[in-house]
Length: 319
Ligand code: 13P
Ligand code: SF4
Image 1: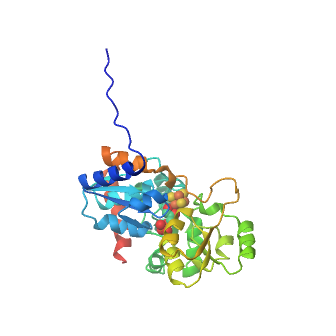
Image 2: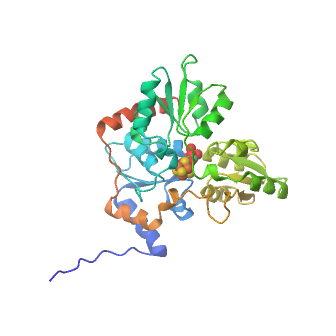
Image 3: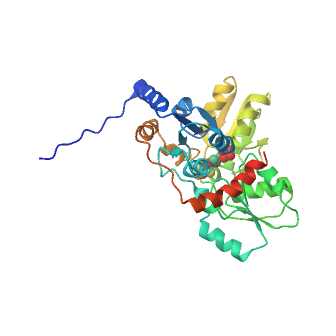
């Protein structure tokens, strides 16, 4: 006769929050969350930030365990910077369309065909792709990164063609652009944006540079998630049409509750296309399970980690 081993059940409601809190202390863990995570996860996190802020928080932590509530490339970045710490991601399937668009082998083939080019990779790529790059950037520091490169070297920017085109306009540098896109930011509707602007003539349009050029053309402010958040707090304006993933609205409302925020919908208004399906794979229940089981973990081969660390450190050294 088989005896069934009972699987401990997952607590619910307030008990779930308390259990996560107790496990976090027991495991000496830090919970890092991106602004695109669901509100409950943002509320329980030790630190919330954009890609650059989270990479820095991961680099500087002395916690034994890093629970990364974001997507796979972000947790991988934490592991590249922290080989000795346990890094867990609530759902290992939380990927990214930009990371998928630029496999390391294809980038290696490009490099071979263009040995004179410097390769700048957006942090939204795998560790293996980072390992094929000269320097990494995020949406917060991309202009600074491009400006730091020698003027006589041609550049490939990968994998986001929209951020790349925006950077060409900002820096005046011609670059080869990899043709990746973010499935959330490429979906925003220009028609809906014009309708919303007509309905709310006093609203400022704020947009992430991953958006397509026709959306960026209407933006009063373009920046990373942390830059958009700062603009809603410091600009003095009180109404915003927000062209980025809708998770950021939680912090906007928290920090400046008297302002009005209108999330720009995608072209198909019947879906929640302005929510990243990868980011939303993480849930409080999965967060609890990964703290309890210390699984699923991010692991990578040491040669890949060391090769990815170099371009990442070049970015970090720029400040
Ligand atoms: P930032 O966190 O740099 O604003 O990038 C947004 C994003 O799409 C992360 O996946
Ligand atoms: Fe990737 Fe876009 Fe999701 Fe960010 S929002 S993780 S860029 S798919």
